[in-house]
Image 1 (cartoon, rainbow, N blue to C red):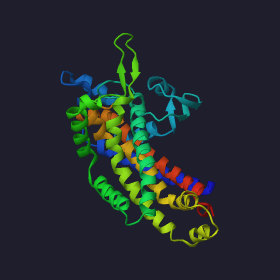
Image 2 (cartoon, rainbow, N blue to C red; image 1 turned 180 degrees about the horizontal axis):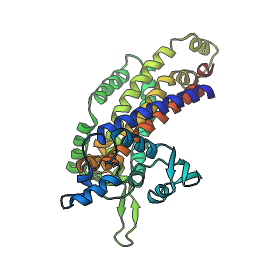
Image 3 (tube, rainbow, N blue to C red; image 1 turned 30 degrees about the vertical axis):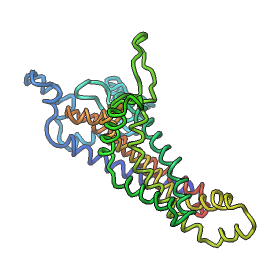
Amino acid sequence: MLGYIFRKAIYGILVMAGVVLLVFFLFQGFGDPSRLVMGQSGDQKTQENIRRELYLDQPKWKQFLLYVNDVSPLAIHSREEIASKKLKGFFVGGETKLALKVPYLRRSYQTKRAVTGVLMEALPGTLMLTLAAMALAVVIGIPLGVVAAVRQNSWLDTGAIFSSIVGISAPSFFMGIIIAYVFGFVFTKYTGLHITGNWFDIDPVTGQRVLTLKNLILPAITLGIRPLAIITQLTRSAMLDVLDQDYIRTAYAKGLHKRTVIWKHGLKNALNPVITAVTGWFAELLAGAFFVEYIFGWQGIGKVTVDALEKLDYPVVMGSVLISAAFFVIMNIVADVLYGVFDPRVRI
C-alpha cells in the first residue's frame, strides 16, 4: 500500500509540473505585465526597473526556470533572494543556498502583497463553504441512495431519481441566482437570510471580526446540490449491485437483522464509487466555488480569483490555479487510501 501511495505521489508531482507549465505560458508567457504593475503614469525608466524585478528582461525559457524555482518546494536561492522575497523554510549553504521552502507565488500586481498571504487569508472561507456543502451532500445523499435501493420501484425510489436528475442538470451559477433571489430577497423577512454576506462581520464596537455562520446557509446549499444528486445516484446504483450478491443472501439466512445487513454489510461494500465521488467532488468544489462565492459575496479563494481576473492581477490567478490543482492531487491520493480502508481487496 505504501508503494502504491508513493507511485501516486510521483504521478501527482508530474501533474503539478504540467500545471505549472500551462499556468506560466497561459498567464505570463505572452505579453508584458510591467505596464499593469506601474499603471498609466510610469515613465520608461520605471518600466525597465519593473521588468528587471519581474525577470521580464530575461529570455522566456529563463523566465520559466526562475518561476519553477520560485514555486518549487525544493529550490536554489541566493541569500539576497531569501531576504527580499521573505522565503520561509530550511536553507543550507553559503551565499547560494539549497532550500526546502514554502512555495513562493510572487506578489500581487495590485496590492504588492505576497500572493500566498492573499490566498491563505481567503482559504478558510472556501474550506468552510466546501466542507458545509459536502457534509450536506453526504449526510443526505448516502441515506437517500440506500433507501431508494432498498425500496426499489417505490415512490421513494422514483422521487429520489427524479430529484437527482434535476440536481445534476442544474448548473450551480443558475441555482445560486434563483436561491439568492428567492430566499435572500423575496422571503428574506421569513428566512432572516440575505442575498450576499461574508463568513465574518465587523463588530461596530470593538472593530474585530465576528464569525457569522448564518451567511453560510444559502451558498452551501447551492454548492451542495449537484454532489448531493450524484452521491444519491451512485449510492443507489452500488447498493442495488451489492444487495444482489450471495453474501447478502447468506447474511439474511444466518438470521441477521435487515438493518444490520443493509447498513453494515451492504453499505460498506458499496462505498467505493461513493468515495470516488466524495473525494473528487470535494476537490472540485474547492476549485469550482468561484461563481457561487462571487454571487453570494462569500470571501473565499474563488471570489479573490474572480476579482484578480477583473484587474488582470495574474500572480493571484496563477497562485489560485496551482493551489486548486494541488487539492485535486492530494484528494486523489486520499481517495486511494480510503479505498484500502473500506475494501481490503484493494490492499491485496
